[in-house]
Length: 126
Image 1: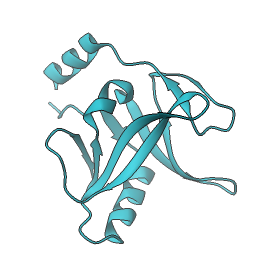
Image 2 (image 1 turned 30 degrees about the horizontal axis):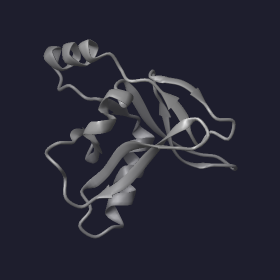
Image 3 (image 1 turned 135 degrees about the vertical axis):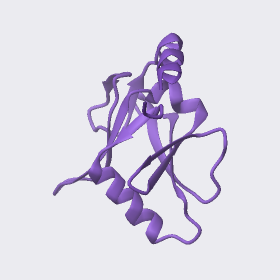
Image 4 (image 1 turned 90 degrees about the horizontal axis):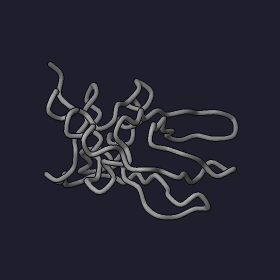
């Protein structure tokens, strides 16, 4: 049986996380969170992790470590983290089942929290 993970990462996202960590001193991974902001109400945040917190949910894929801030877990449950590089944009992208809308520029989103019962059941079955 696999370990419960709040989010999943694609190969491209894992590659980019490893690249970021390799170029920073004392880095262990990145922390994914959310904050209020933007025209749709919320924005994803990504910060470098130098000291992992036991409160964070930890997701690892092929040596890439992502820590999910505890206050963001209900909004990120089931999210797939990806990385894209196009002529117009380079950065992490998120396929989030809890997203109900996004602003026109794509910088902010409206998120609804996942069902607490679904989170408890997912953790119990992992």
